[in-house]
Length: 124
Image 1 (tube, rainbow, N blue to C red):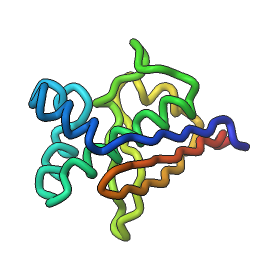
Image 2 (image 1 turned 90 degrees about the horizontal axis):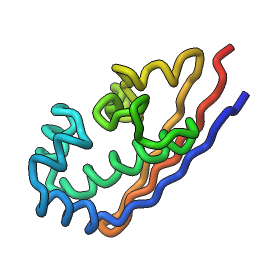
Image 3 (image 1 turned 90 degrees about the vertical axis):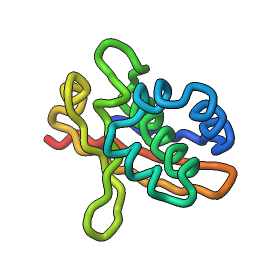
Image 4 (image 1 turned 180 degrees about the vertical axis):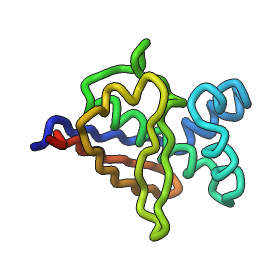
């Protein structure tokens, strides 16, 4: 049974400007070390960061939570399986919100925009 749906659209340039202005401070607050390393290795690093930002926002919306004491940006990592399909690796205090639920993630981006859609289902 679907218990939540979240969608987020991000302007790639906005994320690029925030990363340029705040540098490591911004990146370390929002992304895991593995996400930072992965995105920096890509030619289109701003798109990579933007789509991950959108994914985290979409998950927060699908769970009905904002980023608060029970939901941390860096507890959520966007990972890809062996076929390249995106998914979340969720840890820390945020993991409690996912208990007995499955999460499905879809990502897309262009040079200008990144979008993420998340569907949360009750696994029981």
